[in-house]
Length: 390
Image 1 (cartoon, rainbow, N blue to C red):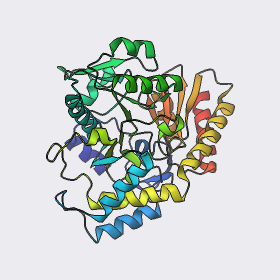
Image 2: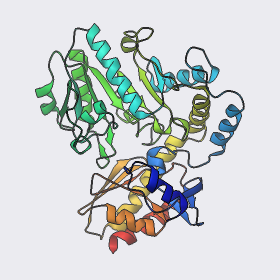
Image 3: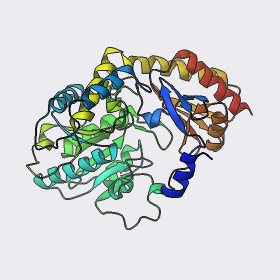
Image 4: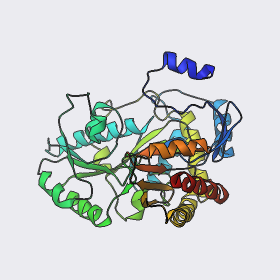
């Protein structure tokens, strides 16, 4: 155990089951530890590093903006923020943006904005989420998430219900004329990379339109090109009333956003919501560089192509391995479902210098930097097959 690890064990809340390496630097889809070992990173900071580690455009934007202005608060206008929100409105096809610092803050803002909209529309009922989801670790967001995240944190807030994922008939049973919003992920990452059913999604959009209910998409993990489109909802032709985004929006610099239709945004007035750090010029300048690079380098298209290549290769290399039950996903958001716990396999891959993650107990979650090369994908799949065959 090196000095950094000793300090963490002594001083940090012990809430992370960390792997025994101290990462020192990275480039593209690779990272190096303090001992000089090199790893292929297929976790990507949990779907954050879509442009990889130390992408030149991100590094350049960080350096340039750091010499100009870091923070002034939202009492003033700044150029980077105005440019960033214009770009997000364009990319979503929605009207207005609220900037914050994380996916959790974005989800909390969605909840709060939905409540305000509900009040103005005579609704005081529930916000419905879908079972086995994950929306963050605040009290409200764990109430919307999988039960394992709620254990020992009761009493939980009121005003929330859950309905089974992809089960429209069950959803109809809990919706009433007081329902304010229905919120969910289009791909459930933490529970094992489960993709929304298109027919279910279309029915939910129609239900929300018919009964004046807000439709909220949590695109924190799926957005910014990860799935082969800029937003996961672009695959389905269904537009939300609000979308929560974060993670990959600024290439690794913390930022979050709520993008909403005018009918939601217009219910808020001065002082109804705010943030100290959200939308600061530093994060927004890096976010602008990130979004420009996503477009310039066709990152979403790369995710689609490389994701198909990787899934097909994995299916071919593991077709004789009975423990593999399913390989699924969209773009470079992939789940390999096993008939056994995934963590031991992930630990074995770690021994072969591949950094991955277990999700939902028995699924290997793969969300690498989208700039990963095909040669690196080949290496990863070889390691995966080798570790599964043991």
